[in-house]
Image (cartoon, rainbow, N blue to C red; front, side, top):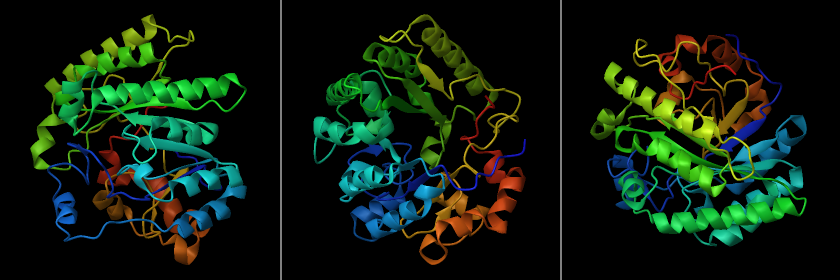
Length: 345
């Protein structure tokens, strides 16, 4: 299927502070207990990567009038630790773009209520990392996590969101976002039930990027038996969503929770397409343009496209090299095996 190439990205993700986080989720490329780079930074052997706020200011100013609708601060690491996060919120107001946030749900520095008051008026969606329906299940994946505080903070955020919307303000949707693994497989339908009870708009998930040998056996796509067990859980979760409306009467949205074809091996599904190329852009902490959100080592194999500090983002976006990737991405093993591809419709 041919991908559409927009004249400008509708959304840009900035790798603001990928190395700052107060949790150690087992599947995280940077912060897992199994990550050698995490240990190297803790030991002072590697520098912490942090983006200059001036880069963000320039890129938003360049793209805001050309079709940019929202931005995402770092999805690797905890963006609410980034010292310039309040300035990013100001930029959203100044340029009339929305903020799409992925957070681990701990709300460092300001607390849940204050962050909610800042984010809700300009937020499109806030994704809470969420991998279980109780303390033991959640902390098995999200090491050092406090589940009871997560629940209090989720309710605080939704309360601020609902009050703001009731006064005629912006409605910021809330998502619980999972990584699908063996260790939390049975938790998927339980998280769907929890989300419905709490008035969460969506449960979204992705299958595991197994960055480390220690978690390769957690991949639900690793063999036919694992896929069949995943399919049972997917059917159960869909049934729960269909039979249990949200408090507002709507059906909760399930994103990427569907059955996989057990005969297609490592490929997510042959009909699944890339939702990012030609649609969204990524800018790493040094200003490097990246075509997608796959792990850094993998996405660099797709080619070098330029740096927004030197070329500007729009010149890269319209370049022949980037157009070629959009047209031929499925020739790459990285793209064929990508767990972020989505089914049409």
